[in-house]
Image (cartoon, rainbow, N blue to C red; front, side, top):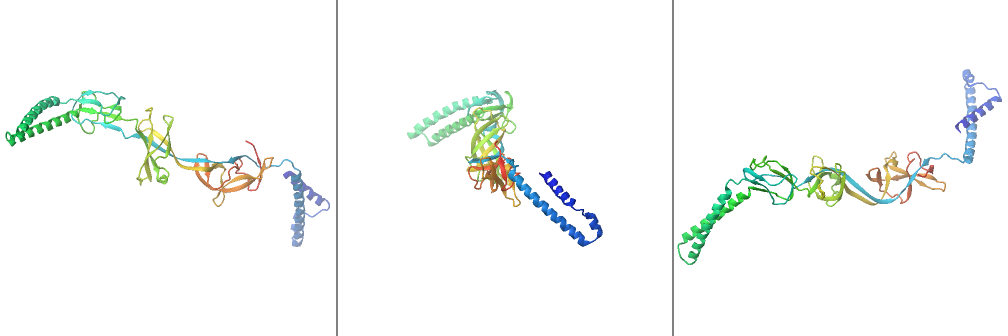
Length: 390
């Protein structure tokens, strides 16, 4: 059509020039006569208006007779209200409060190590025995002496109850018996320290000292590491802006990249302290570990359901445009005809939270409205468009 317009304009000019030989524009300008120049200008303007009018008439006729219109081609999708869940994504590390080093309570030679690394033990179970250095023999002697002191005390008590004998003899016998009893209890307590026991049920993760080694209380003399893999949790830091949304009991989806494993759990504890350095607070998330494959310090990715909208319309972020006022808008279609022609209508929207490639529309988009997807950035408000089927 562009070439048709040029040919038509040229033909009219040549036709108008063919009837009468006219002076060229250059020759009229060279005369320096302003009146002749103005007359020539008006003549050309009149011919140009005539040509434009004729071109408009031809375009109208072509538009009326053309059966194949060149309309913008688009695709659409139906905006439906649905439940929208937003997830806060964090990273944390697996921990356990029952991961301790076990130290001896008394010095001596490690006579027996009764467990192996990886062995499961119960609370109170004896893990190792330290040589008592003769305490057991001393205890036997003290118990014999205590038995004698008890007999003496009981006899003196019976006599004293009958008002026989002196009070001082009764009190001396009683004091001797109590002193012997206390000494026996102290020695028994010392003997219990020669046995290293499990503080809780768990797994012996590491043995640091071999049987026959000299051990003693104090830092650097640990004998075992024991871990309870059944009571695991994940600790993570949450930005303070989510303090009202991330609460105790919130659903959490935990993914372990190394294991390729996902588990569902919940927030078991929320910290009350905001770290001034990074403006965050700590949370703890329970970790079920029935298969015992989750280990301390394992990296975990957390998705916490911090927001839900029961009637949200979700749209791709890629179809949203913004005007000079900073308003976001999309195009919907109206006046859809049987031949899939429709009119594009600009619609101002307000958006909420995003999740992946979609975003929540929080103002009133009608349920079931057709929204332009492909071609959304190449149409104009009020333009006729052609809808293609996907």
